Image 1 (cartoon, one colour):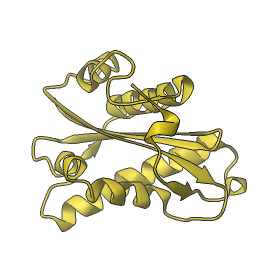
Image 2 (cartoon, rainbow, N blue to C red):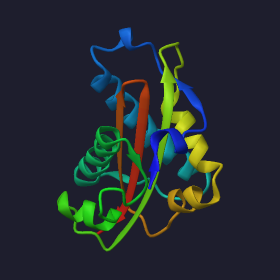
Image 3 (cartoon, rainbow, N blue to C red):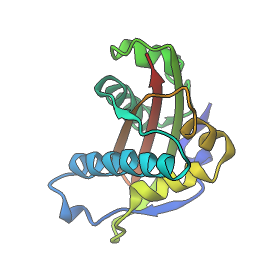
Image 4 (cartoon, rainbow, N blue to C red):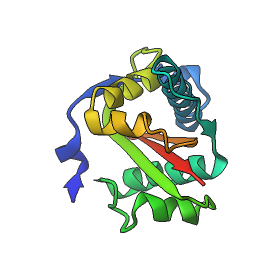
Length: 159
């Protein structure tokens, strides 16, 4: 198990939090941006759009919050695999894949944090494979922003 300090390699700038009522509102905006840019990338690569799943979004959000709360980072740091988390959130999964990211942030203006996170996953072969999966039909994105950290989770699924 790695700690937050051991896994972080970069710094992202988030939109100035004063633009949002709260860090939670900023996190929701970043998660929506991740969803939109993921589908934009899929279309550019001849793949179909993924539907936004409430259950997968809940699963992704809960896991992003868990990683922040426990200061632990990894796909199974809660003792569960992504499939179990998705099913616990009410998603009747036949297929699940997951991308996660954790980075420090600064409050300086940066308009496209969601796009930056998606870009990092696109530039990583394993993460890109999840994004390009033809098995996936649904997507949920979750983001936790607090204490100078951003945790982001994408959960891809098919029922």
